[in-house]
Length: 352
Image (cartoon, rainbow, N blue to C red):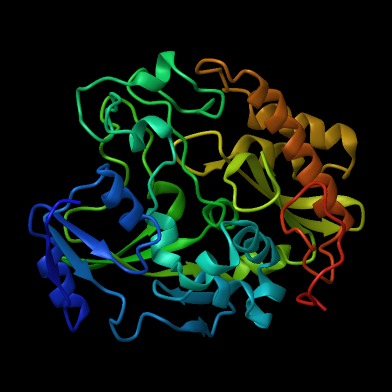
């Protein structure tokens, strides 16, 4: 591992100033960063430790009914918070479907948003990767790419974003609070991660020194609590990233869909919201035909990036199934295998 400087600031402004220096990287739990440093995929000159910054580890209920989640809240803490799981069940289900219990106990909300792609060519420093080394090329284009992107990819990069947590957050209109050199600003989560285009090394809209301090879910997202699911298909039932995933949330009036929120994971370099599919469902009768049309709309722009054409049909089916499960109603208990299409609804009481 490359030698690096270590800085432990006492406040957010100090952290921002330290991280604005070239070659800096923020360190919270380090569940992704440290692995990348060990393998050489990331080689920062300086680590800015934000793991003990005050005021960033609270879950706050807002007066308007929304919720504000500090960037240092642990994934397990958020998923197991009874009020949060009741109001935003698909988010809790997505969190519990990711990684392992040990990692969820350590990993932070902010770190989850900022994790890097799991593309093996990005991790392998002997491979050409435009994200890691701009201009080097993309070995994934002609390599083993059955798990790579089918939406929003370019000839420069076909990597996918790995987060489960981000998928329902994007569907529900989450907002990210950022502290930077020019002060505090906000950005919708769906605009935080960037598609690769010709500059895949620029993965987010953040500027040097920018620190995510919180994520907010709006009050209107609670309207979907009764009909919300996260569904994730993976190559093994635990501690695996999604081949494809979908978050589906419905506001129902009897058997009619008032409005819908849909997002996909494992298909692009960012969590992929599907507004066309949402529009098709507004005012429709909930049922197989409507859900299939919505799934077709969600994948209308998809195209294979190599040996992964199967992912397009798989993603259509995951969207339709997630919508079917959401229409049936949020279960009173988190499934024994959260997010899994093979799980029953039996599990820990969260939504009672």
